[in-house]
Image (tube, rainbow over all chains, first blue to last red; front, side):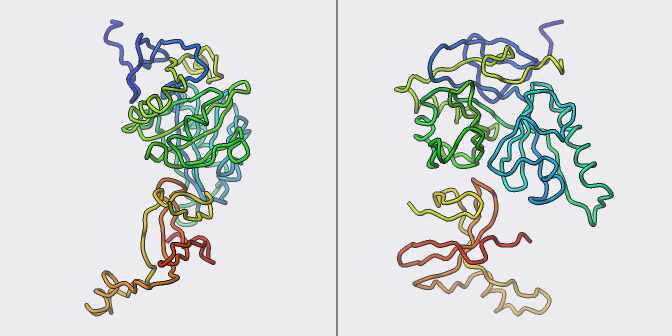
Length: 235
Length: 87
């Protein structure tokens, strides 16, 4: 029966009307505001840890502080896969909702190819962990996005210091948060990634801080208006 | 506001870091006397002036680092060894 189908829930309560997209309960709200905040937690999130200068690092070829949508080593990966150099020897791979198993498997294969003959004693330790349901992810888009973030974050987010394609981890509203600058069609846009238990707080803190800037909640869709990966390849 | 120079992330607010204190060598447990353990665990030099300190960038790169801080002026400089080797 349809009413017993399992539905995943993000840490952030969906703004009404609530709808289901790719098995996730999300907000169906549509905003035309200039500054929007969207809960994109349904996106697949996989963390990779490996040596800073090791074979896996060379295979991914995304340095700390940068992002890439075109990591050739993840062969056959669907378009829209986003690899974030989130820390020294740490990467965050984002993909379409439901793709976490495929992404994890491809990263595992890449680790095996990159470190052939590795043993527990001599090999490089690579860990791949699916964080999809353990983290919150939101996207803040609009010309004033940096102004809003500046109210909750002490880091310089001007274009010179934090251009499109940058990634950093810092305190936002007092929470350790990954900030990823990933512009949409020339409009400044930031992905914010934090612990699941802090997601609602961070979402509300940004809405509170941006009241006078007109920040508005926009729902999650797969129809790609903001360039989010499509789920069709995995559904 | 005090800025800590992180070798990975650049200058960041000290609130992003956890203070780990003065680095001191851990005595050998098999030979250390109780006095040596007490000194290692509890006694600090508490110098007025430049000291070497360990900090942990808990909200950033999650790396431990060494800095030199003048305890009378809070002037902070990167330590010459930059990043402490991870044990």
